[in-house]
Image (cartoon, rainbow, N blue to C red):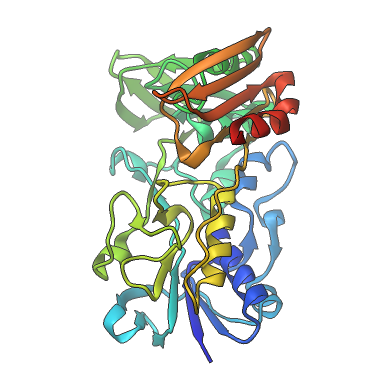
Length: 377
């Protein structure tokens, strides 16, 4: 019987386990994770305040329930120390596990801006449920939060906090939110909308200091000081490649995989935020589902590539709806935008004039199926 070992119990790990079990009822599956292994949807962390959900409300199934559901063994609170590809073994702080096929679903880690600042109580990254529990435990009614970063994560948390009667400062190195993901017209409309809900926008060349005094004080390079009760670092994530590199797997920004989700060791696959497929790094659930589907079908015979089906990304910004979609993760090109009054359609073309993406905002988000057809044409 083939034995599959999955490292990681996030969405990537569990979606892969689900796909493997559906396509391979006879294989044995083990999962190793350094947390409790309970299942929750990480994207819902940035919406739970407005939905009046506590962190534990986001757990939909315990690790035991997930183990029963997919007929697998879960080794919770067990830390992987090394992978030995030539022996097809994984060593942890408790045991040594063998595998026939190994799936790395080690996720991403926050991009660090300053080790000292990040030890200050009230300065947080949110990368998993335990981080979010800490953040919510400290967050009192109508407190102020400074978000450093104006990308997708920063925008989603700003929406949730503003809708929950908190005051929000957003510090950005860029001229508008979602820069690099949407055309300027949509980014500026997002900014106008957030500011109309009392967001305090601070564009800066950089953050020079963070200190905890009577409040947490963030100082910009222009010597402007912003005070708040908490600081949320939304400065991005990088693939967690530590284990992969120690096992001599090929890595660039992420763990390099081919079109079949295989690493340079054919018995080792990578999926989710840790992986870098031929299309690059994609921090989206749709990318996880496509890779997991391929892995489940490539355990014995490798002939199923990662699907190229277009999947739109719905940004969780109820104050100003935005949907984006890119072909093969291509985002660099020329935007053509039409619309007005915050309702925009942006079409993205590469240098040769080929269609590579779109962005919709406001009322135009209802046209996403039409634009998927346009992009796929």
